[in-house]
Image 1 (cartoon, one colour):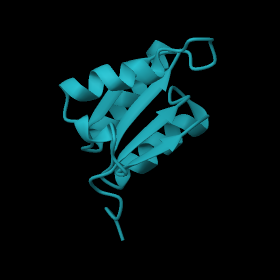
Image 2: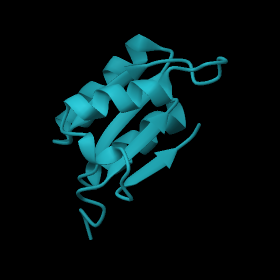
Image 3: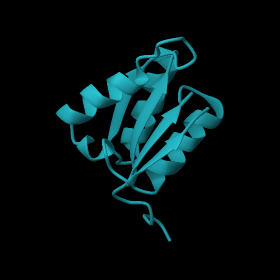
Image 4: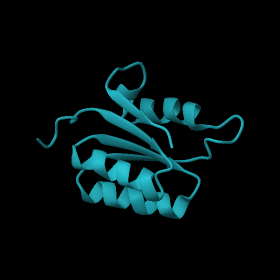
Length: 99
């Protein structure tokens, strides 16, 4: 049954290629809003384009989550407040997928 996860938000790190990209696209096919993050900006842009092509909303955060003081948590807070991804903060309607 397609769309069982609709209305939720998935945060996928390592989304520029491989399993991360496949995961982001799988969530998009289930009508999930997808936050994609990676250090590879070119690959991340390609993933975001493919997610949009499936009709899902996507928020792109280019960051290296492995670096000390990663900006991912603060980026999520600042971006979600300004976008349609505002349900992410303080909500149970999201899925976090670490690489």
